[in-house]
Image (cartoon, rainbow, N blue to C red; front, side, top):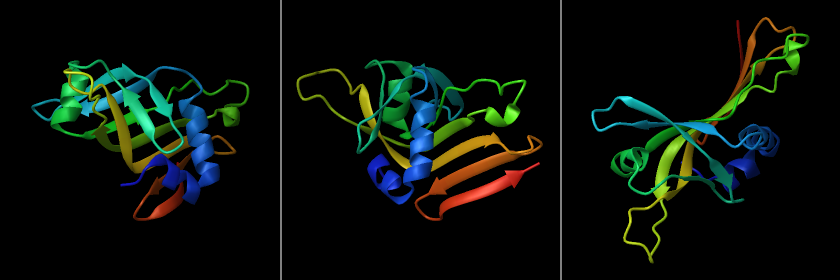
Length: 151
């Protein structure tokens, strides 16, 4: 696991493009695990603080109880369809997977509503040129940056 600052220091160009995708719009999709282990998806927002990627949620929401019980999560950036006239101009989409680290508010009796994400994987998917294949870029702390093309 690593924080955003360390990932961005290792892969600044890739991190910049991923952050751009996450900050292109306000609403993201968050995946958490329910009590029975099945997935739950919810809308959410993320913030880049420089050192961390943070995710906020209402205290006592079902998604907050999910991550307090099982810290694993994934966040998917906003996405749009590739332009019809030039599919290679599609900016792609990005995903972060990791663990939620609760940031407790010492002045509140409520459960935490703000979490740092400790990153275990970053992925960005786009179309190749020609647009007959996907370009998949990924990074993990163990293997670093990888680039794959998939038809």
